[in-house]
Image (cartoon, helix red, strand yellow):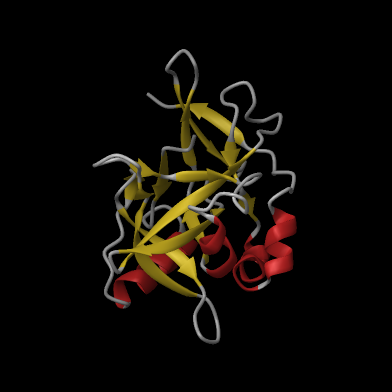
Length: 188
């Protein structure tokens, strides 16, 4: 689920600002189509306010070379791989949409009805051999997604980012939230 997403500073002013904050902080986030294990721009907790960093997408898997790129929001608090990170190191993936493939291997791009609107995905991160790595959260699909896939990203509104990152009670409650309606388009 959500094995790739878009990060397009050239098409979205908000993503351009986030990208520039990451670059100014010394990071080199991937632009365009972002794949697992790429360095991506993330919004994380700073000392007084949120900040933008670059971080590898994916936790180390159970086998050599394997990456775990997402976690189910319904069980994240019970899974030892994710529970501590969820409680202490939540983050947000700023995107311009994500991709999913149907059972017939058709590629779809999902975003809001306004193609330039930023789509924020909830996640968390941890350190492995002193290197920060992140995962995003998925949840049950709503009507806009269910015909294509049985999971969808846990999507935050812009005004929920600070609460997600800093407020434990909000974050715990949000894991069960209904997701906004999205539109899809077939990608060639």
